[in-house]
Each structure stands twice: as C-alpha cells, then as structure tokens.
Image 1: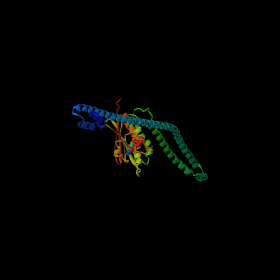
Image 2: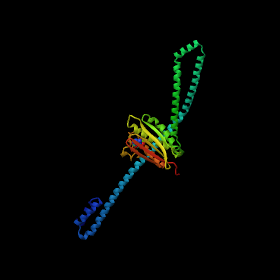
Image 3: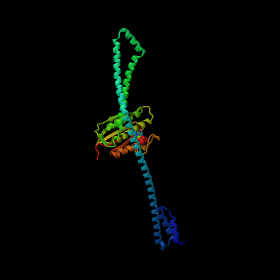
Image 4: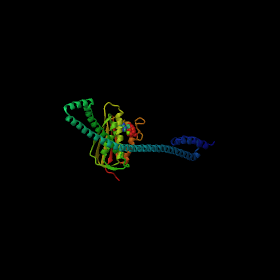
Length: 344
Ligand SMILES: Nc1ncnc2c1ncn2[C@@H]1O[C@H](COP(=O)(O)OP(=O)(O)OP(=O)(O)O)[C@@H](O)[C@H]1O
Ligand SMILES: [Mg+2]
C-alpha cells in the first residue's frame, strides 16, 4: 500500500468528533505524508473533516426531529385530555341543571302544600281549643282525660316544631337547587355582562357541603361593576380553586377547621379575585409546575392535574387576564385578574 493509500485508510477510521479529527489528521500528515504530497493530503483531510461535520449535523437534526415528534405527541395527548375533561364538566353541568329543573317543580308544590297544611292545622287547633272552652265542667274533665290518653298536647307542640324545621329544610333545598341552576346555567359558552361576585357566591355555596367541618369559607367581596366574562367558565375556575383549597386542608388531617378567604376588588381596569387558604402550602419545587397539564400530587383517581391548567387557559387565553400563585408553608394565595373592558 502506498503512503497516500495508508494515510487515507487511517483518515477514514479516525475519530468522529470534528475537533478531535482535525488534530488527528494533522499528526497523520506529519508522520506519513511526503512534502510533495502535502497539498493533496491536506485537501483530502479537509474533505474528510467536512464529511464528519455533515454526519454530526444529521445526527443533531435526527435528535431534534425525534424530540419534536415526542413533544407533539404529548401535546396532542394533553389537548385531548383537556377536551375530554371540559366535555365531562359540561356534561356534568347539564346533568346538574337538568336534575335541578326536575326538582324545582315538586319542591315548589310540596313546600306549598306543607304551608297549607300548617295553616289548616292552626285552624284545627284553634277550633279544638274553642270547643274545649265552650264545654261544661264534666265535659272539660272528659276532654282532659282523652287529651292525656292520646298525648294531644305533646303532639300539638311537636307538630309546631316539625313545621318550623321542615320550613327550614325546604328553604335549604330550594337554595341548593337555585345555586345549582345558577352554577350550571349553560349559555352556549358566551361572554355576558354579569357579576363576578355572584359567581363567587354561587360557587362557594356549591362547595359548602364539601367544605363542611374542613374549612370555613369567608367571602370578602368588594364593589365590582358588572362586566363581560363567561360565567360558565369562570364558575369552573372558582370551583377548582375552592376545591383545591378544601382538598389541601383536608389532606392535613388537622384537628381545627381551616380558613379559606375569597376577596374581590378592582385595580387598574381589572377585576381581581384572590383565594387564600391556610393549608399546607405548595413546596417551592412544585411552584413552577402547578399550572402544567397533569401535574398533581393527589392519589390516582382523585386528581387529574388538569384543574389549574384549564383555569389558566380560561383566564389568560380566553379572557386575556392573568393568573398568579404565591405560597409559603401555611398559606397559599391564587390571584386572577380579568379585564373590565373587553377588546373586541
Ligand atoms: N391551595 C393549594 N394548596 C396546596 N397545593 C395546591 C393548592 N392548589 C393546587 N395545589 C397543588 O397543585 C396541584 C395541581 O392542581 P390542579 O387543580 O391543577 O390539579 P388537581 O387538583 O391535582 O386535580 P384536578 O383539579 O384535575 O382534579 C395539586 O395536585 C396540588 O399539589
Ligand atoms: Mg384541582
């Protein structure tokens, strides 16, 4: 084999990294190439160096392509899951409002009938009392015996209590139904001129059963003008914030009740709402991730990790607002801002 052929075969099997290859080629030239072939050898070495650079670029491109492919798969998966959850929430909303509508009528007539029963009973008691007063002494004694035998005084007093408690129960049931109707109002997903404070009140009422014995929810609502937003979507945002706070406090298994405070106010053309809780707080290392899709610290089946991701999308992308979180041990504050005037 000539010196040049040997030189080329050694070049071919040289290191892959372009930087290592250049110094390797230089040492080969010095060792194996005659001065008269120097120029040709340098050109061949340069060509092989270019080849290595080309191969390296192809490798990088392939890696980038693989990365982009896997990211786009993740994105498709994430958006599909977001859509499924939103559809599920919308379906649940429709179901809730359907049930609430169905309950509204029977509750109305049962409550009405109950009120009629109460006034009729009062008339009957008055009638019995009048008869008793009109009776002679012998009859009065007989009436007293019968009253005691059939425990009439006890029954009349207990019936009065039953009427009061039942009226309270009906009031509560119809409040729940009204809140469900207001919460699940399906209005085609439109923006409308309405009150954020009402959304806060309705949603807090919906959450109250889950918050019972876990946390007291305090509403500190400022003077907000009505403004255009999508109440269905904002109810979902508030629901997720309230439930996150309730679940975080519940997870502490503490002895005393927790506190959730909801505040609203206006600031520089924005309606602002903050939800503060005295739960465990969010660890520093999770703070950057809470708005990521599928980030959850809850057990499988309890959290999908989409609540805050969807809430962020609703507030920031759909309403052109902003969303912030601050947390320290024992305190977490989520704050969102919505523009009072919409750019159309
Ligand atoms: N108030 C809070 N206190 C402590 N941690 C919180 C609070 N809010 C959110 N987090 C943390 O952020 C994570 C993501 O919340 P997110 O609402 O997106 O999902 P999730 O509640 O886990 O599930 P999902 O809302 O889909 O049912 C939670 O799992 C929890 O770790
Ligand atoms: Mg959540």
